[in-house]
Image (cartoon, rainbow, N blue to C red; front, side, top):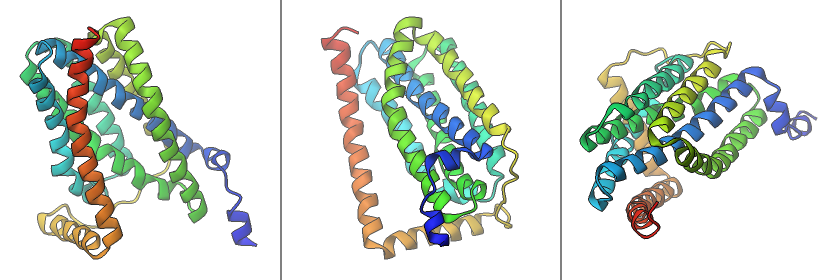
Length: 258
């Protein structure tokens, strides 16, 4: 009977949980922010570098390097930090960083902005995912919530890029950065209102402990061929798409004169 009851959990059921609703709304806002950041920074770097494909490629590299360097460490670190504080700080840092872009006229500084934004975002999303099990106690609720979060991600990819292009077109790229900053603050405020106090791993943030957890993660992937093959495939796909994106952006700029 318990299994039958759990099987009836729906998106509406998990969204009735106020704290999860706030987390979900914050995720949706943050994902749209990510797309606005990406589009606005790409357009700005194209303007500063006068359509240089090399500049776009370097910018993409600056956004990719943090994922490679800090991605494996992100889960280890957020387990040791208060998740709500981590999420709010990440949003406020991103809001502050992106708000400075209109003041920058040097493309090299925009590379640094891209690196910083990608670094903080690499910490934000694992912290958000790790918060879900603590907001929803039952296994079936967690599964449904994760499904909702992934569905939201795919939907906001479409909506976010569409809104980003529209906002940049209507307001100009510099104003778009300020709108982006304000919406990061909105995401942070939503998370700040979550009443749940999140647990943290009862261990100090020392290099030995971090390294041990990192080794455990590497060992898990190495011992699970399916997971390892998926990781390799995903990595190769991201690398291929990075090069394609750089070429497409320059092609659109030159061929369509946008």
